[in-house]
Amino acid sequence: MQAKSISIPAEQAQHQSRMRLMWVMALGAVLVLAQAMAATARGMPESFADLAEQVSPSVVNITTSTTVETSAGPGPQLPDGSPFEDFFRDFMDPNGDQPRQRRSQALGSGFVISEDGFIVTNNHVIEKADQITIEFFSGKELEATVVGTDPKTDIALLKVESDQPLPFVPFGDSDLARVGDWVMAVGNPLGQGFSVSAGIVSARNRALSGTYDDFIQTDAAINRGNSGGPLFNTDGQVIGVNTAILSPNGGSIGIGFSMASNVVTNVVDQLKEFGETRRGWLGVRIQDVTPDVAEAIGLESASGALVTDVPEGPAKEGGILSGDVIMSFDGTDVADTRELVRMVGNSAVGTSVRVVVFREGKTQTLKITLGRRETAENAVPAVQPVPQEEPQETDVLGMTLTPITDEMRAQLELPDGMEGLVVANVDESSAAYEKGLRAGDVITEAGQQKVSAVAEFQDRIGEAKEAGRKSLLLLIRRQGEPRFVAISIDEE
Image (tube, rainbow, N blue to C red; front, top):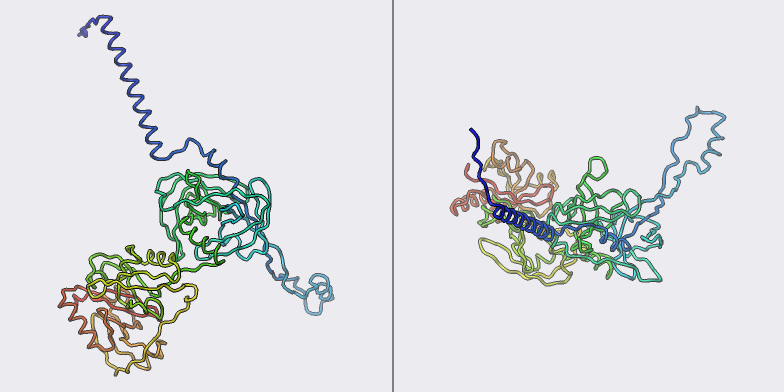
């Protein structure tokens, strides 16, 4: 069967053709506009060339020289009485096998932050260096001196003297960086000289091993020698200091870490003013609030920082107690222990702050005057003597408990003033064993009240059940370190 043909007048055909062409052109314009808007929204640059040209004069290569001692090494093995013994002693080792000195060199990166010559880099780049040479993009070289270092954030501040004002780059606000934003790293990878790599922010607020870690993760290529170099946003602002990579082979696999600029600027300001860091100190030992701990103390959500110990210091003077949950610090909510440590550390020494704590089902606001962490690193909690309990063993919640005796105190190396119950044994099928309690642990509190007798411990269990709790919060100490554990009381 043949298809039926239909004739269309020429004018009508031309009109339809023009309409189709107009629709195609309009659709094309819409697509181009949409792509342009999307590129603008993402901040996608057409090229990084202008940015690289803008910031490169402020990025420096750093060469350090260090004197290290090495042993003379093993000499030739000769039989006793050999005629060659004197020869090798006098000519091959005239110093009598004394340690020898040699020069060791290392390479890194950095960037100028002021026209008068302040330079930021990593502490590990210049640590123990006898000589630090700064090479600028122009090829000019200057000797640098160390203004101050902070091993906790791996940041160092250097200074060079120049007859001319130096080009420098500003810091940006790292808190504004979003996952997916474009970034550019500049440095001296593997000693190859000035090199640029680009990528995106892969993740925020990464922690590696430091107390004050706040790393930006990026897939911009970072290799050995990039340490101390800047991570730029597309506005030419430094939002991070390239510090570390995650790699099984020592080379870049697209997982690099830059210390966030908001951490760096605080450290740099202190190093510039004092030559050292001066961090705030609250004076508490803390742990995160887990869901079972939150349930045990009647807290609606598992947030805040649970205080496990309060040694002599600002917190004790201000009224904070073991068992308190710090919910807010200086007007800012506390999500967890890491956030509290950072907030306190970034606060000025001597500052008076308001701390909101959750205690016995209610919140209280306390006023604390912060001390200085650097002078209190070795603070030791004070202890108070208590009466000695008579030995008594009882099985409770899958644990065999007994009050502390002099013999146990000596065996476990407990302080003279510590009171509590020693865990003599733990049933491996019990909730206590599952929660990590072991023989030798000392329970000092139950239900956020001190216990020194098994009867007191059993009273706390009864009180928790009457209050409708499913678990009981215990404060235990293992080798002197305090930790809270919420243990189920359903099986009792």
